[in-house]
Image (cartoon, rainbow, N blue to C red; front, top):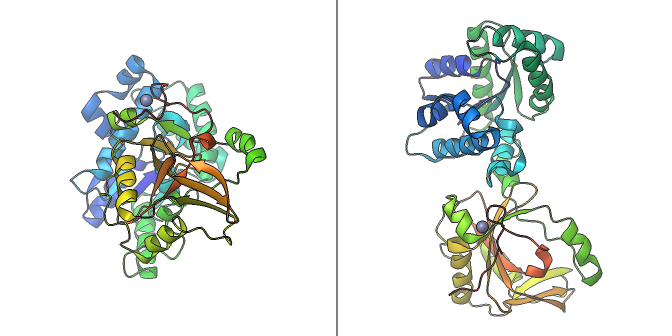
Amino acid sequence: MIQLVGPGGAGKTTIGAALAERLGVRFVDLDAEFAARYGNISAYLDAHGYAAYAEQNVGVYLDLVGGHVRVDIVALSSGFMTYRASIHPYYLALRQRVALSPSTFVLLPSTDLETCVNEILRRQLQRAFARSAAREEEVIRERFSTYFGLPARKVETMQPIEAVVAELVMALAAQQAAAPDGTGPARARPSRSVYRESRVPQVSGRRQAADQASNMATYYCGPCRLALGYAPSLSSGPLLQTGAQQAKHVKHTLVDPSERLQSVFSDPSTATIRVEVENALGSGAMEVDDRGRINFLTWSGEGVGYRYESGTQIEEQDLTKVVLSSNAGQRHQFTEATARLGSQRCQRCGGELFQPST
Ligand SMILES: [Zn+2]
């Protein structure tokens, strides 16, 4: 999916529609999609405020990209890359994926700040519901560096539409040439960095307090993440279906003194671990770490294993953590301790993350 991002007045909708026509594919404008569902955006903002709008808008985006109708090109809202991280549980992961995708293009009138500001002001003030010139200038100055700083390719739109479209078509063709199997260009694929296995922080008694203080993850209790619609889209599947998963299984079921830190299930049987995995995915709490990666946690209420430091048992574990890969067929699970999460509560309801199962 081709994603066009950039500040208001950059030309996302115009260029997106023209590119779709040129390629004969389907184009969707996220603002139009929002308006179709929830009515006029200005009215929505007046009634509900920006945070509610942004959360809802991320939801519209998720529905679009996960919907039944294939979307080929999407123009994202002008503020989409600038929301607060906590606006939506999936937002950071999405933003990272958009930012790193080789088929994301940043549209800016010019990559020169002052030229860009002047052109955006000129364009925006012609619009029916323009903000004041001063506010408009403030917004574009604020957002320019965010958009300019994205790793995605920048395309200047102060040139005829056909020229911009031609530039995009050439960039896309070059990418396909570099990856004839359709997997994208040779650079790192975005999905890998979005859902990379969570880093296991160092921990031993004296380090634990520091680790908890540096745990910047956000948590949602099971009922809240389900109420918000965050159910992982993959079935739990065979536990050992790939070599990678078999290797992970061995790593988390056999104590290996050569591993500096290792979390190990007491019961290595896949039947037992499967129950934990299914509980985590089905009803467990959700963790969105500071880099937007999403993991699911289930609490057993008793020990599920131990953490070892160079083969020496150091800490009892009472959680099973399931880490999802962007590859729907892959999943990785290991033990974790509630003590290591720090005093976290659900971001939505403020309640305890783990409740005894009834
Ligand atoms: Zn909650």
